[in-house]
Amino acid sequence: MSPLNEVASKESVAAVTLPKHVNFFDTTLRDGEQTPGIALDVERKVAIAQELDQLGVDIIEAGFPIVSKGEIEAVKAIANCGLQAEICGFARAIQKDIDAVLSCDVDSVLTFIATSEWHVKYKLKMTQETVLDKIVTCIEYAKDHGLLVELCAEDATGTSLDFLKTFYKTGVDAGADRIMLPDTTGRCNPRVINAYIHALKKVILVPLSIHAHNDFGLATANSLAAVEAGAETVQVCINGMGERAGNASLEQVAACLLGFHNISCNIKPHLIAEVSRKIERLMKFHLPLNAPIVGKNAFLHESGIHVHGVLAHKACYEPMDPGFFGRKRQFVLGKHAGRHAVQSILTELGLHVTAEQEEHIFRRIKEYGDQGKKVTDSNVWDIVKDVLHLPSEDFLTLKTLTAFTGNKITPTSSVVLSVRGEERIHTASGVGPVDAAMKAIEKGGLLEGIKLEEYHVDAITGGTSSAVDVQVKLRDEINDTEASATSVDNDIVMASIRALLTGINKLIALQRFQGKSKKMV
Ligand code: MN
View 1 (cartoon, rainbow, N blue to C red):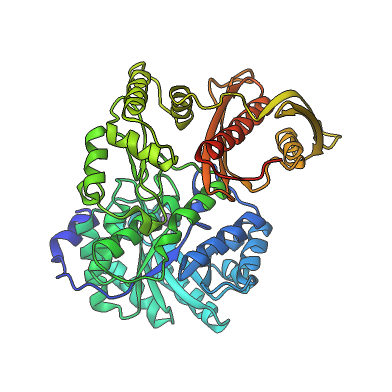
View 2 (tube, rainbow, N blue to C red):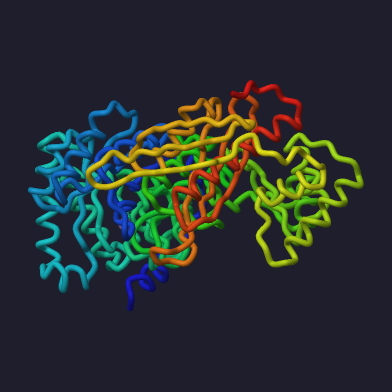
């Protein structure tokens, strides 16, 4: 009988007595860094830890010190940068791993050894007795050296319940302060997780954390099931990062605990979107558009019926308030768009139009969508400009762009711009040719008050001659307006600069139309 069936058949599902508070243990810097293709340097690991601390994470697992010198340096830097959170290091149940953790000045160690039959017999080539001896020695050593100890049975959900109970009891008797139940391969469903925790809670008195993986898409559900059965702590990764299909996502678990169960936690929900976006960039791991809470589409409405409904009453199509998570409701225009979305977007742009102009804009957007094209806000802007006869002459035009780069020179760029018909030349250096060109434009004071909020490059076809699609989002902090722009070119520097200039021109045209008085150079 597989251990899963054994647990589910022996243990009844515990009655739900919800805790008042749940702790968040974040493993983005350990399990999250084990996401295929991800590796972080010291600076980025520290920056991520600072973000997680700001967000309100209780325990930050900073890394696995034994793996490299750089990892020791990073974990040590995190432990010594004055964060509020408890800082934890990961270690096998081996003395040299614990020594590496000790060298990092952390508060605690999460130590593990595998316990399932196939791991013990085939991977470790040990007996269960040896496994128990190893954890006792390791826990006593870590405790003697002043560490708080959390004990993990790797592949716990592939382990017989009897041995699992013996394992954790032995560990707690040896001094373990907390235990962690990992669903290492994400094989469990919520009912089985609930049964495991229920069984363990009867015999283990120290706090317990759940570490769920998303192989079947159940990591969030399994984390909630564990909380319902008495787990005090959830182990999560921001943006659901982690090995294979990832770990339970911090944002989803926090949203469920706060939204469904009214269970408190120290996570500050209004910071979730911002921290998620910053860590997405630091990790260079792009979230799918439809990721719950933090994906670009999570609060985006296109269909006319939905837009009308959500404007009539937000509960019609919004199960939670976007603002609670630091997000904004957005409408996108396409062939499913309705009049309400068009009106709402025009209002947001501060544009007052006649009924006839609105009808015209609406029709043009539908035609655009019918051609199978994605209607970006750049397209909408072009349509609006055309219909309203807004001034089409651009404030800024690019006359000449040169950029030099190479392994022996500092990347440098010169731009010749026409600013309201007057020619200006600016030169600057940067970390690469795009940066140098951007800085050259900045040098002329043309970006004063304007912040480049997003810069994103997509190679359209692959290969070195591929056209690249550059998307930028600019924010005019003086007049509180935003503009997105895109540009496609075979040359990445040209595409970047064109997108930037289009965005600046758009902001200026908007200000003129809205009668705002930003002083422009
Ligand atoms: Mn894991």
